[in-house]
Amino acid sequence: MVFFKRIVAFFTFAVTVIASWFGMDVNLQKTVAPEDFEVVSYAVASNIQSPDSLHTEDFDIITTVILFGCVTFDEAGELHADTNMLETALANLRNAIGERDVKITLNLLGPGPVEYTDWNDQMAKLALLHNEAFASGKLEGNIKALIEKYDFDGVHFDYEYPISKDAWKAFNKFLVKLDKQMPDRTIGIAVSTWDVGLNTQALNAIDSIELMLYDHYDEEGRHSTYETAVGAAEGFLEKYIPLDMVHFGLPFYARPTDSDAYWYGYNSYYNQLDENGFYYDESIGKTFWFNTPDVIADKTQYALANGFGGVMIWHYSCDLPSSDPNSLLGAIGTAIN
Image (cartoon, rainbow, N blue to C red):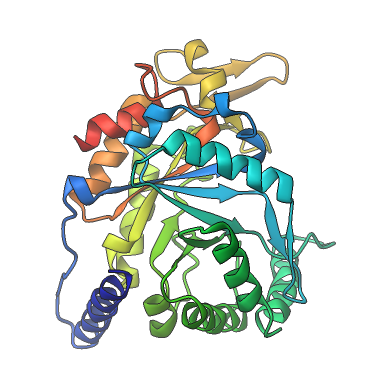
């Protein structure tokens, strides 16, 4: 099934690119049926160390969990796992999921941090470390061994950001090598709309793209509104990537209107929002705007109506149980059905 999806994705990519060369308006994107629409949620491992941190009914809606924050790799291609955290989180997830057909993939974070003078300098230095890891000849084998040891369904990468051509070239080459090592497991990557350097071989090697449609603001300082998210997503359509492998990113957190470095989980403030979704924190003098259930539902309906393969949530522990009428995940389930 994974192989078939990749063949379809590659064919769609190739045809749309060739058509664009000749000025033809060809759209091979297909509408995804509600029963095939994926709900992918990151789960931060440190936040799900207790069984009570998970709600079994949530996995009637969630189709894939990306376990985050318990394994990294270094520039030598070696993996570093917090084994106790990983195993506890994984056991809690599997217990909450039960017999449901919900996939669990493992997110890997790369080498860092680095000293830097500005953002571009930081990304350039991180790219050098990532390139070294990708060229080590060890990383793909180490990943395969860990994925098989714990029987994960696949692996995800949050590499922010390989902004240079050389960095994308190294990343693309590695993704192809990794796919050959474990063709029966899925590979996913997280990207922003403006930073996509996948070549055809890498696109054929991966199975999903988590599209980070957040951490951007409108003129009022509102974080990831429906309009800004859809506007960014529509720009992504020009990338000639099949939308049925792309998951529309949804933030279950808020940022202040001045874009300062604060991230407030929805479940801690949902009952303190005004009628427009704002919360003012007097202790720090900052205003936050949240994606409320109606905004999340509208984004989900947009993704479903426009051929996206699903939605992606950052992150699980920021929400209420889906059975709560104020739940964001519950709003996704209602929008799909």
